[in-house]
Structures are given as C-alpha cells and as structure tokens.
Length: 210
Length: 210
Image (cartoon, rainbow over all chains, first blue to last red; front, side):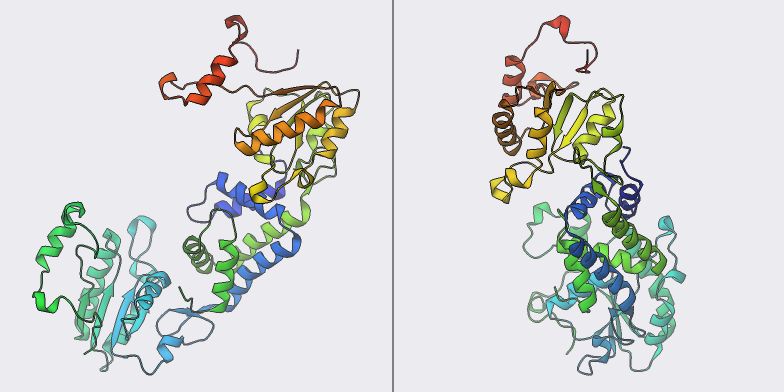
C-alpha cells in the first residue's frame, strides 16, 4: 500500500513497530491522530516522552516508578523476607490488586526465551540471587507465567537459588475459581490432582504471611 | 488498576484514547515503549509529531499529502470530470491499489452519523457540490461504505447533487468475487439479483472511462 506522504509512511512504520499492531491498524491510528487537533497530538507524544524520561526501574526490585527505590520497597510495613518473582509490571499489578500479598517483589524484566534471544543475562537474576542470599530472606515465591518460557525460567532460578538456602515456592496451579471441571484442560486437572490439599486448609486467607 | 507512577498513568491514558485500544493494551504498549531505548522512543514520538505538522489535506479533494494540492489532483492525465466520493484515505488507497480508476477523488472525511454527532457540516460536502457544479464534471461515483451511515450519506449527497445536473452513480453491490452463493447474506444476494446485467457486459475492464 503506497501512502501519499513520506511523513505518514514514517509514522505508520513507527506505530506498526508496537507489539500486536499491523500496518493496517497503524494506518487507522495514524489517520485518527491526524484528525485530532495539534494540541491533542502534542499531549499524546509528550505523555510518552515524559514517561520515557521520568520513569526508572527501582534499584532494588526492578518495579517501575519515579524514584530510585519504589514505594513497595520503601514500605516498612511489608515483609522484607518474602519476595514474589514476577515477569513484569503487569503481573506485579495483578498480585497487588488482590490485596492479599504483603511481601515484596522482584521484577525480572522478562522470562528466559531462547527463541526471542532472551537469556538469564538479560534479566534481573543476579540481583535476585543477592537479595535471596541476605539472612533476612525467608521465601522466594515464583509468580511466573505457566508457559514453557515461564517454566524454563523457574527451573533455572531454582537451581541458582539453591546455594542461597532460602525456601523456594511457586504459585499453585489448578482449576480456576468459577471454572467447571469438564472444561478444564488435562494438564491443569492433573496439576490440580497432584497438588490437592486437606479440605480444611482450602479456604481462609490466601496471604502467605502467618 | 493503580499504576506505580503518574507518568505511566498519563501515557496509558493517552494511548488508551486511540480507537480500539483499551487500558490493558495501552499498558502493554507503554511498557513496550519503556523497554526501548531513548533514541527509539524519540524516533517514535517525532514521527507522529512530524506527520501532524507536515501533513495537510488537499484543498481540492481532501486527500492527505505534504502540498496544498495533492498528486492526484495535479496529475493532468487523470480524468477531471469523474470524481469518486470516499469516506477517508484508506478507501482512496484501496481504490488506487486496484489500478483501475483513472478519475479523481473527493475525500469526505467521514460519513453522516447522528449517533457520533457527525452531520453534513462536519464533512467536505460544500466543496463537493462546487466541484460537481463545474461544467467539466460528468460523473460523481459514490464509493461509500455499505453501512447505514454510508447509505444515509449517499442519500443526502444525492439530494444535494441533483441541482448540479451531474450523473450520480454508486459502486455495484453484489456477491464478492470468489464467494459462494450459499454463504452470501440475503441482502447482498437481493442486490446482486436486482442489479443483474447482460452476461456479455459482466467481464472486461472495470474502468468507468471509455
């Protein structure tokens, strides 16, 4: 598709570089931006530029924010010795939204994926090992995606963390609350069976803290 | 979902203002931009800003470009008296891609949609009437979407153009090439029947020019 202007072409190329956006969608978005007034478009690009310039990763856990150390790491009421390892900010936000985790986080910044050229050196692994080696650290909780990449990452991290002598746990896998058994996939059902637990322990608060 | 930074929040708000992009997708795109380097993000926002500043609508037909009058309107080899009326640039590009139309265009900039608050005054209607009133103009071809809004727009334009004494045509509606009859919807099949034509006229060049 030949566009009538090199400027539109360049913008469409840039927008199509976003994940999950093809050239057709990119053109639709570019035309939408062209139809807005200048002030609106400036606000759009400035918000993105300001975010890029102002947001940094927490030097302790990798969570994003505007300070060197994030609010969660600075919050003295949160358990320092219990660390949930997540892939990125969205998973951290999902756990925070439950309101049932009072520990801290470690944001890896991705998962190991040889297909995408992501190895352990591209992730915040060394700082996790350092944190886990502290004598205050009691538990590392893997809150990683249930994909091959997530499993590979968990496997690798478990090996690395063994030397730290810290307890390593992982989120339970099983039939989701509200799901019918007959529609659960086989692997999930198998995990649910393998990880069955005393009924009396199956309700109550989900917080791991005593 | 409470984001850890006001800057991320603002960027997500802006991205979620694009059509078809929800807050969840917007957050994914924002995190993707945050993971890129500064140079990359600057290239992204600059491409959009440059497009907004450099691209303007053709003063004759409303097509987008970097000049006051677009390349199609300046092209003397194209028939000046045959004008295809389209909703926006994407429809113009789709027709251009066929390589079978040698007339000119008129880009309305939308279609009449009371639901979205778009009336005739928001579209390039007056300039179309002016062009159609020129004694060189022979045919106005409606190449509008087959939606209620497209039909409403065609109905309105037809009434307005009657005073110009110009021939008004519309794209044929019918079973798409390659489609099986049994899967065509009823309305399309009815239109196909109503607009049937002598078999001998059904092949050959699709260009309306003699």
